[in-house]
Image 1 (cartoon, one colour):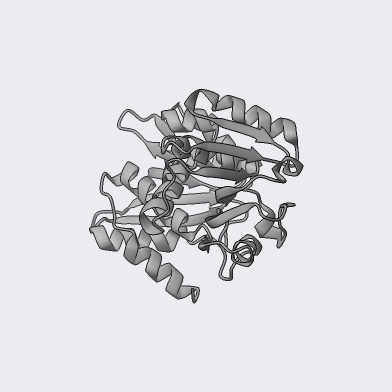
Image 2 (cartoon, one colour):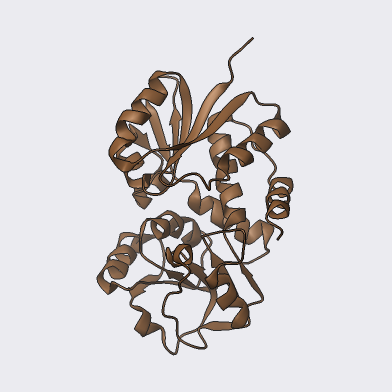
Length: 277
């Protein structure tokens, strides 16, 4: 009997991960034989554990907090989107034994926004909250959709300005602090901070969301996040979390590994059903 190909997600913490279930559903749907596990890997053990995984026949890895920057350094070569983002969430063993690094977060977000929620990005005023690794992974795919403008707001202003400069050749974007948002309005506000994980919110001024605007939290949980609640309280036409992005970025990773693109609609519906949303 042929041994299934091995894949895994590394992270710390990792017990909450829905990725094994998602990839199991993808494998069943597409008739692929694979094993996908979630493994707690502290940052200090990442390189050694990844080396062992691939040496023992592993075919691909997903990497989540706090390992995306380490995975970027680990990859032998990277896609353009991974190179720009400075973070890698997908590692794939190549035929020559080298490791390809990619970042599927941005395409996962854009696919969820546009195809699953029907949100147009072209000519929109878009605000990203936070200037960390999560933001770096989504900026290029958003700019590819030609928004009118993209603003990055962050507690540390210099970090937001620096991040905007990194991507400045790709479109119109600026960086600022939260206090500079007063008097501005946005059609789409994306929370890329970690505040939802601690039950908090960034310091957002009133009237920030344009009429008929949308809110999207990259974080997800079994209950609506504080930012999803904020969006609803501020009149958002839709205010949703990042579970759809999780499934869509997983589908992109699955395609990179298996060269088969799974359908995501039924998987998203299944995951939402499990959490009662």
